[in-house]
Length: 234
Ligand code: NI
Ligand code: MN
Image (tube, rainbow, N blue to C red; front, side, top):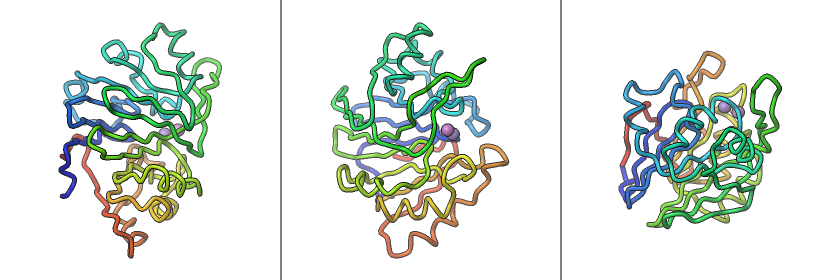
Protein backbone atom coordinates (compact mmCIF):
# COMPACT_ATOMS: atom_id res chain seq x y z
CA UNK A 1 0.00 0.00 0.00
CA UNK A 2 3.03 2.29 -0.10
CA UNK A 3 2.95 3.03 3.62
CA UNK A 4 5.76 0.62 4.30
CA UNK A 5 8.38 3.03 5.58
CA UNK A 6 8.68 1.62 9.02
CA UNK A 7 5.67 2.82 11.00
CA UNK A 8 2.63 0.81 12.00
CA UNK A 9 -0.85 2.27 12.30
CA UNK A 10 -3.86 0.82 14.12
CA UNK A 11 -7.22 2.57 14.38
CA UNK A 12 -8.90 1.48 17.62
CA UNK A 13 -12.26 3.09 16.86
CA UNK A 14 -13.52 6.68 17.26
CA UNK A 15 -10.50 9.05 17.49
CA UNK A 16 -8.21 6.50 19.13
CA UNK A 17 -5.12 5.77 17.03
CA UNK A 18 -2.08 3.67 17.90
CA UNK A 19 1.19 4.42 16.12
CA UNK A 20 4.35 2.37 16.36
CA UNK A 21 7.62 3.93 15.28
CA UNK A 22 10.45 2.42 13.31
CA UNK A 23 12.29 1.84 16.61
CA UNK A 24 9.26 0.24 18.26
CA UNK A 25 8.06 3.22 20.32
CA UNK A 26 4.31 3.10 20.77
CA UNK A 27 2.12 6.19 20.83
CA UNK A 28 -1.60 6.26 21.51
CA UNK A 29 -3.72 9.30 20.66
CA UNK A 30 -7.01 9.96 22.49
CA UNK A 31 -7.18 6.63 24.34
CA UNK A 32 -10.91 6.07 24.76
CA UNK A 33 -10.32 2.33 24.54
CA UNK A 34 -13.85 1.54 25.75
CA UNK A 35 -15.41 3.12 22.67
CA UNK A 36 -18.16 1.02 21.06
CA UNK A 37 -16.01 0.21 18.01
CA UNK A 38 -12.91 -0.89 19.93
CA UNK A 39 -11.65 -4.38 19.02
CA UNK A 40 -12.19 -7.14 21.62
CA UNK A 41 -8.48 -7.48 22.33
CA UNK A 42 -7.95 -3.73 22.82
CA UNK A 43 -6.55 -4.14 26.38
CA UNK A 44 -3.90 -6.48 25.01
CA UNK A 45 -3.13 -4.09 22.14
CA UNK A 46 -2.55 -1.16 24.51
CA UNK A 47 -0.63 -3.08 27.18
CA UNK A 48 2.71 -1.56 26.16
CA UNK A 49 2.49 2.15 25.41
CA UNK A 50 5.26 4.77 25.61
CA UNK A 51 3.36 8.01 25.06
CA UNK A 52 -0.25 9.17 25.35
CA UNK A 53 -1.24 12.22 23.29
CA UNK A 54 -4.46 14.08 24.10
CA UNK A 55 -6.15 16.45 21.67
CA UNK A 56 -8.68 17.82 24.18
CA UNK A 57 -10.57 17.09 27.38
CA UNK A 58 -13.84 15.61 26.10
CA UNK A 59 -14.57 12.17 27.56
CA UNK A 60 -14.51 10.46 24.17
CA UNK A 61 -10.83 11.50 23.83
CA UNK A 62 -9.52 11.72 27.41
CA UNK A 63 -11.06 8.27 27.80
CA UNK A 64 -8.93 5.84 29.83
CA UNK A 65 -5.97 8.20 30.28
CA UNK A 66 -5.90 8.02 34.10
CA UNK A 67 -5.47 4.23 34.21
CA UNK A 68 -3.15 4.00 31.17
CA UNK A 69 -0.92 6.86 32.40
CA UNK A 70 0.54 4.63 35.14
CA UNK A 71 2.38 2.51 32.60
CA UNK A 72 3.61 5.08 30.08
CA UNK A 73 6.63 7.38 29.93
CA UNK A 74 4.54 10.53 29.50
CA UNK A 75 1.16 12.03 28.72
CA UNK A 76 1.37 14.97 26.32
CA UNK A 77 -1.46 17.48 26.53
CA UNK A 78 -2.25 21.17 26.84
CA UNK A 79 -1.29 22.95 30.05
CA UNK A 80 -4.78 22.97 31.56
CA UNK A 81 -5.33 19.24 31.02
CA UNK A 82 -1.87 18.56 32.50
CA UNK A 83 -2.77 20.55 35.65
CA UNK A 84 -5.96 18.47 35.84
CA UNK A 85 -3.88 15.29 35.53
CA UNK A 86 -1.57 16.57 38.26
CA UNK A 87 -4.53 16.97 40.63
CA UNK A 88 -5.55 13.40 39.83
CA UNK A 89 -2.10 12.14 40.82
CA UNK A 90 -0.62 11.75 37.33
CA UNK A 91 2.83 13.38 37.38
CA UNK A 92 4.42 12.00 34.22
CA UNK A 93 3.00 14.61 31.84
CA UNK A 94 4.54 16.98 29.32
CA UNK A 95 2.53 20.20 29.35
CA UNK A 96 2.48 22.10 26.10
CA UNK A 97 0.51 24.56 24.05
CA UNK A 98 -0.14 25.25 20.40
CA UNK A 99 2.95 25.85 18.25
CA UNK A 100 5.12 24.11 20.83
CA UNK A 101 6.99 20.89 20.29
CA UNK A 102 8.94 18.31 22.24
CA UNK A 103 11.27 15.58 21.03
CA UNK A 104 11.22 12.26 22.88
CA UNK A 105 13.03 9.11 21.73
CA UNK A 106 13.88 10.88 18.45
CA UNK A 107 10.20 11.51 17.72
CA UNK A 108 9.01 15.12 17.54
CA UNK A 109 5.51 15.96 18.78
CA UNK A 110 4.08 19.32 17.69
CA UNK A 111 0.83 20.69 19.08
CA UNK A 112 -1.19 22.48 16.39
CA UNK A 113 -4.52 24.27 16.38
CA UNK A 114 -8.05 22.87 16.12
CA UNK A 115 -11.44 24.52 15.94
CA UNK A 116 -13.35 22.86 18.79
CA UNK A 117 -13.82 23.02 22.60
CA UNK A 118 -12.22 21.07 25.47
CA UNK A 119 -14.32 21.00 28.67
CA UNK A 120 -13.74 18.15 31.10
CA UNK A 121 -17.08 16.79 32.27
CA UNK A 122 -17.28 16.29 36.02
CA UNK A 123 -19.88 17.40 38.54
CA UNK A 124 -18.89 20.90 37.48
CA UNK A 125 -17.47 21.35 33.99
CA UNK A 126 -13.70 21.74 34.29
CA UNK A 127 -11.86 24.12 31.96
CA UNK A 128 -9.72 21.99 29.67
CA UNK A 129 -7.90 24.70 27.76
CA UNK A 130 -8.31 24.72 24.00
CA UNK A 131 -8.64 21.77 21.66
CA UNK A 132 -5.60 20.90 19.57
CA UNK A 133 -4.26 18.58 16.92
CA UNK A 134 -0.92 16.76 16.78
CA UNK A 135 1.78 16.58 14.14
CA UNK A 136 4.22 13.74 14.78
CA UNK A 137 7.55 13.56 12.98
CA UNK A 138 8.99 10.06 13.29
CA UNK A 139 12.69 9.23 13.45
CA UNK A 140 12.60 8.12 9.80
CA UNK A 141 10.98 11.39 8.68
CA UNK A 142 7.44 10.05 8.25
CA UNK A 143 5.06 12.82 9.33
CA UNK A 144 1.56 12.16 10.64
CA UNK A 145 -1.19 14.67 11.49
CA UNK A 146 -4.05 13.75 13.84
CA UNK A 147 -6.51 16.64 13.77
CA UNK A 148 -8.43 15.71 16.93
CA UNK A 149 -11.99 17.04 16.87
CA UNK A 150 -12.24 20.03 14.61
CA UNK A 151 -14.08 21.92 11.95
CA UNK A 152 -12.14 22.63 8.76
CA UNK A 153 -10.05 25.80 9.19
CA UNK A 154 -7.88 27.70 6.75
CA UNK A 155 -4.73 27.30 8.89
CA UNK A 156 -4.71 23.66 7.75
CA UNK A 157 -2.93 25.21 4.77
CA UNK A 158 -0.22 26.45 7.19
CA UNK A 159 0.05 22.97 8.68
CA UNK A 160 0.71 21.67 5.15
CA UNK A 161 3.30 24.37 4.44
CA UNK A 162 5.13 23.93 7.74
CA UNK A 163 5.06 20.17 8.24
CA UNK A 164 3.93 18.47 4.98
CA UNK A 165 2.16 15.58 6.72
CA UNK A 166 1.95 12.48 4.53
CA UNK A 167 -0.59 10.60 6.62
CA UNK A 168 -3.57 12.40 8.17
CA UNK A 169 -6.34 11.33 10.50
CA UNK A 170 -9.36 13.61 10.14
CA UNK A 171 -12.79 13.44 11.80
CA UNK A 172 -15.61 12.99 9.28
CA UNK A 173 -18.70 12.07 11.33
CA UNK A 174 -20.34 15.51 11.54
CA UNK A 175 -22.50 16.93 14.37
CA UNK A 176 -19.59 17.48 16.81
CA UNK A 177 -16.88 17.85 14.17
CA UNK A 178 -16.66 18.48 10.47
CA UNK A 179 -18.56 16.10 8.23
CA UNK A 180 -17.74 14.61 4.83
CA UNK A 181 -18.00 17.84 2.83
CA UNK A 182 -15.81 19.86 5.21
CA UNK A 183 -13.32 17.01 5.59
CA UNK A 184 -13.10 16.82 1.80
CA UNK A 185 -12.17 20.48 1.76
CA UNK A 186 -9.64 19.88 4.55
CA UNK A 187 -7.94 17.31 2.31
CA UNK A 188 -7.61 20.00 -0.39
CA UNK A 189 -5.89 22.27 2.14
CA UNK A 190 -3.55 19.64 3.56
CA UNK A 191 -2.97 17.52 0.43
CA UNK A 192 -1.67 14.47 2.28
CA UNK A 193 -0.59 11.25 0.60
CA UNK A 194 -2.96 9.18 2.74
CA UNK A 195 -6.24 10.26 4.40
CA UNK A 196 -7.57 7.98 7.14
CA UNK A 197 -11.07 9.00 8.32
CA UNK A 198 -11.88 8.78 12.05
CA UNK A 199 -14.61 9.91 14.50
CA UNK A 200 -17.57 8.38 12.64
CA UNK A 201 -20.05 5.51 13.16
CA UNK A 202 -19.20 5.29 16.88
CA UNK A 203 -22.83 6.10 17.73
CA UNK A 204 -25.93 7.11 15.74
CA UNK A 205 -25.45 10.92 15.62
CA UNK A 206 -22.14 10.57 13.79
CA UNK A 207 -23.06 8.02 11.12
CA UNK A 208 -21.15 8.63 7.90
CA UNK A 209 -20.10 6.81 4.75
CA UNK A 210 -16.39 7.70 4.51
CA UNK A 211 -16.10 6.50 0.89
CA UNK A 212 -18.18 9.52 -0.09
CA UNK A 213 -14.96 11.46 0.49
CA UNK A 214 -13.58 10.13 -2.78
CA UNK A 215 -15.69 12.61 -4.72
CA UNK A 216 -13.78 15.46 -3.04
CA UNK A 217 -10.37 13.88 -3.65
CA UNK A 218 -10.55 13.96 -7.46
CA UNK A 219 -7.47 15.65 -8.85
CA UNK A 220 -5.55 15.26 -5.60
CA UNK A 221 -2.84 12.66 -5.12
CA UNK A 222 -4.52 11.77 -1.83
CA UNK A 223 -5.51 8.16 -1.27
CA UNK A 224 -8.43 7.44 1.06
CA UNK A 225 -7.75 4.54 3.42
CA UNK A 226 -10.80 3.28 5.31
CA UNK A 227 -9.59 1.08 8.18
CA UNK A 228 -11.50 -1.41 10.29
CA UNK A 229 -11.01 -1.00 14.06
CA UNK A 230 -8.07 -3.14 15.18
CA UNK A 231 -6.70 -3.59 11.66
CA UNK A 232 -2.95 -2.86 11.52
CA UNK A 233 -1.39 -1.08 8.57
CA UNK A 234 2.37 -1.23 8.18
NI1 NI B 1 -14.70 16.76 21.28
MN1 MN C 1 -15.09 13.80 20.02
